[in-house]
Image (cartoon, rainbow, N blue to C red; front, side):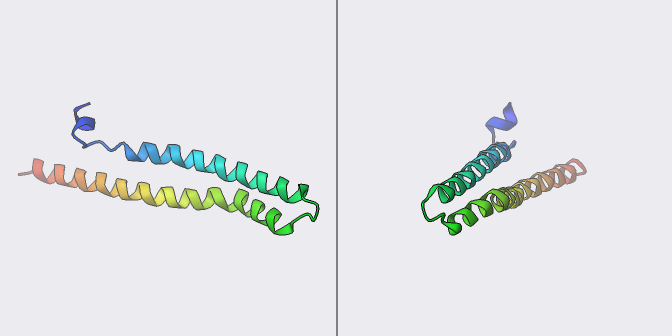
Length: 91
């Protein structure tokens, strides 16, 4: 608990994971919505259908890569903290 209150334990990686899953749900629902709207229109808008398919397929992938990049930054911080702790212990 003390590590959390003194900002030694990061809360952001957990928040990033929650935001990732929310964004995946948003990409899938938004993509399916775009596909359905594209199909429901009188002129059967192929651009909107294509955008919906791209959102469903590539949206979660792009969000995964972005969130992994952010988490790597926090893991680098954790590793550097461990290195500092180990070198301080040796003195």
